Structures are given as C-alpha cells and as structure tokens.
Image 1: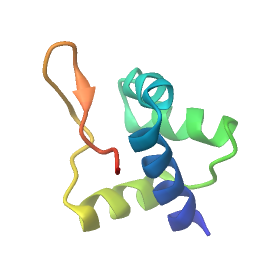
Image 2: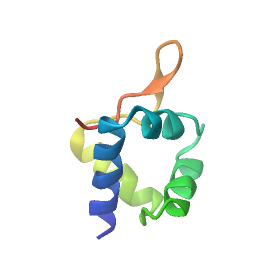
Image 3: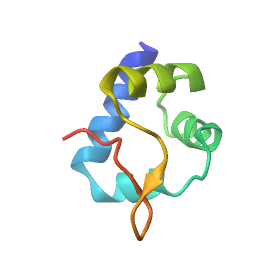
Length: 73
C-alpha cells in the first residue's frame, strides 16, 4: 500500500496547487516524507525514491521560484 500512497500524493499534487506548494517547500526527502506521514500518506524514503525512479522524475527543485516536477496530472 505504500507505493499507492506515494502515487496518491503525486496525483493529488498534480491536481491541487495548494498541495503542490506545501510539498514543494521541504528541502529534503526526509522532511517531505515526514510531512506526508503527518497528512496520512504512509511510505518510506526508499519507497518514494523507487516510485520517482520508476517514473523518471527527480526530487530536486528547478526554476525560480524553485518547484519540483514530480507531480502527476
């Protein structure tokens, strides 16, 4: 179910600019996972990394203002 939670969060962020903005804020994957867990998404750092790798997405921020391009529409 953890992989499904990662995917659910990435889809939610793709559909909602407020979720995207909230999760674009943390500087580290650890903090990102911590925030997600507090919001009811249950997955580990390794599971997040695996989903991002499988989808070809990169966690680092780009642009100005810095944003992540991990969100799924």
